[in-house]
Length: 170
Picture 1: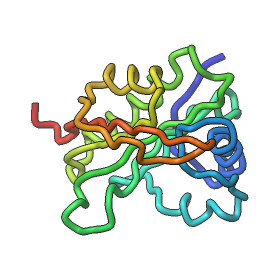
Picture 2 (picture 1 turned 45 degrees about the horizontal axis):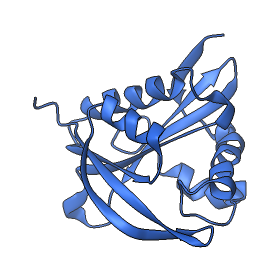
Picture 3 (picture 1 turned 60 degrees about the horizontal axis):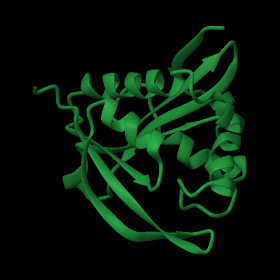
């Protein structure tokens, strides 16, 4: 079956919440600790546009959403407006087929094509070898670590930060 990458749509929201809630309840890769209701995520969803720096792409296999990638505001101060934070979440059964690489690479291509975006940042709660490898494969560079910054499942977690120049200036 062919996987297509497309703009996220409001009809996808239930599935996006389902995928994300798996990571909330089962993993340390997000520091949210309480699962979301769909109504809780409407405002989050509404920040995304087909044009501009804040995007939501989904991997779709014959109408079934396998995962999503986003670019969101990096920080709320205007001086950061040319930077975005990127994330990717896949259905746990969708990994290992290259879907995440295609999805995240498509997001990076769209960011490179957007003159309003200069840098993309990804924070990875460690350990997460697959996410580190994905970021490195797509040209991100490790730029620093926050030690024991997150607390979940009765322990502290480190987060490594990765940066990618998406300005199109090689």
